[in-house]
Image (tube, rainbow, N blue to C red; front, side):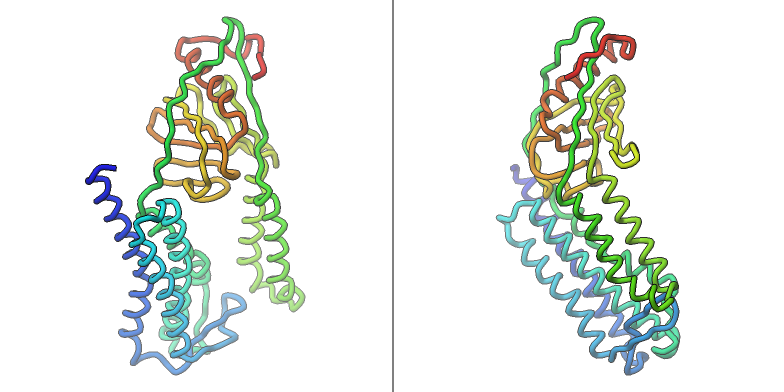
Length: 335
């Protein structure tokens, strides 16, 4: 690593850590600005989007907000100054700490802000601020993406699968993750545990937003838990085996280069379908993978068994496409 790269990495580490302190600063500044206006108690719990059904003293709410933002901030600062931490590990720590602090800040801001606006804790209607609370964990993406990107060693794959003039090829594998397969079951169980009591009490308003969000998350996870990866004359395609829903397609003419390497989920943001600036991936676990760089300079990775065969066929078909070769009418060769 050059001195310039070292300085850039250090700057990004510090910048990510400082970003992780922002929720703590927001809680502190709003308390300083509102302390003379806030009543003794704040609204602290809502069963729906209407009026609150539980309350908390302002001092306790402030303590909770400072704890949920301060502890993650300290963890992030300490992690950022441990130079031996791999970038992938640092990103994971800062991202998770950011999620916690984002939720902690939103808890304080919603309780204190709505109480202050309503004039009393009893009249603090939640309304669509529920969406802000539910989405507050996304703050974790801020320090995550500011932190240095993980580096991994790859090399361009150059071998082409030999194909006759009248031959094309097709390669297909099914990939899955045991963790993702069990997650829909866990999400359904959690949904039932949280919302069935409200349904039994006919509190439908408390269920429809949260319950629908949980069920949608369950369907999305189920879709990406079992996928089919195919290489043929159409390029690289990834389709969910649940409903045959296409998730990714890279046409042959858009492929600039292909690489084969070992990847870890921590290098690509975790398990499942991951989207990051300039790159995306389908990661089912650590192991061999195929990485495609497009003509637009973006990267896409997918963990698959036998990525060498997929890469060699993809390059052979890509070259034939550039040479104006035929595809569907040719005799098919299974890779």
